[in-house]
Image (cartoon, rainbow, N blue to C red; front, side):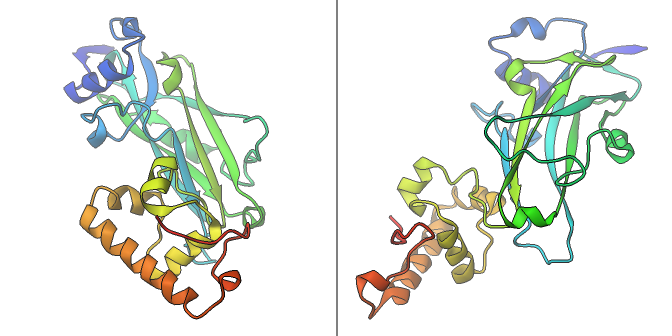
Length: 258
């Protein structure tokens, strides 16, 4: 039997932001489900669609590590329940992309281990969705994309349309972090390339992956320190060489930092 308690205030704040165009979804006894940001980020402005895309690579991990897990946050709307409620996700193909293959690049969403974890526990409105990636040899040749969407079931109807899906791009080679976008390219990092990315890792000993860069960018002093180190290392790398021999990326372009 369902309780009469509504979701926690934090979730309500998220729902109010996420459903500005679908306010009718908030005022109903129908249980709905959708993705969202990490709970700690809900108070931020314009975060409902945060974490839509995550990038992941095995390249930093020892060769003996054959699986990795990426987590996404999921929320319910409506009344809480006094029983566990399973939810369902399925893969959706992305046009003109290298789509991941179930049980080759990731563990299928209908295997017993996954089904046991795709549950909203009794008395709660939030869970974390584990997506298990597999280190197939093909990941060393190209990146693959895994897009997955929520499905209605006997427990949940769909929430807001733009919060029903998430996407991972992953490989076993250098992958451009999602936060390394056009704005931060202009401000700090310059044009992305795998050679530049590897250079940054080699010089600093840091991963320069999504998690590292998300934490780094707001820390202006620390960011300035690392960028100064990279610029100095690049100058040292090119010192005494003719321009044609300066460090270049895989496209033949000179590696530079703004």
